[in-house]
Length: 155
Image (cartoon, rainbow, N blue to C red):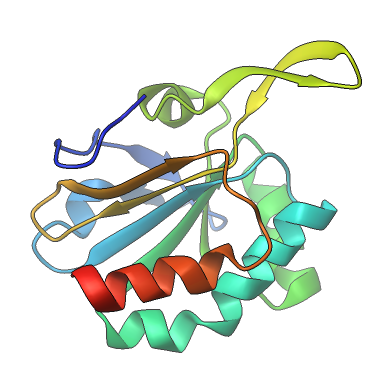
């Protein structure tokens, strides 16, 4: 698993509008909150996306871009954004390359059944391109506020 203080893995993936978004687009300009979630329009993922959207202006005032990542495609992301009026960039990591580089594609167990999936995780990448925060297996509810507090206090 990734550790704070190390260089963030580079990424490049299409967003909901099928426009390529890369870490290089933000390095030296903005902090990036890169959060990974299992699936569009599911209860926990909707809570998390709505919470980040509610705090989007606060993050923006702190020069911080919020980027969500799942293996859903661009059309799914666009429908999710439209349905809930989300104010986020959502990357379509359909190949799983970004998930693999951040070590969030892991075996999970639910009701005794093991399967691979995205472990809900959040990373804060500072303007220097280093990981200031790396948290795996986060809870969706209230997490956006925790991340905002961390950025206010640490960056």
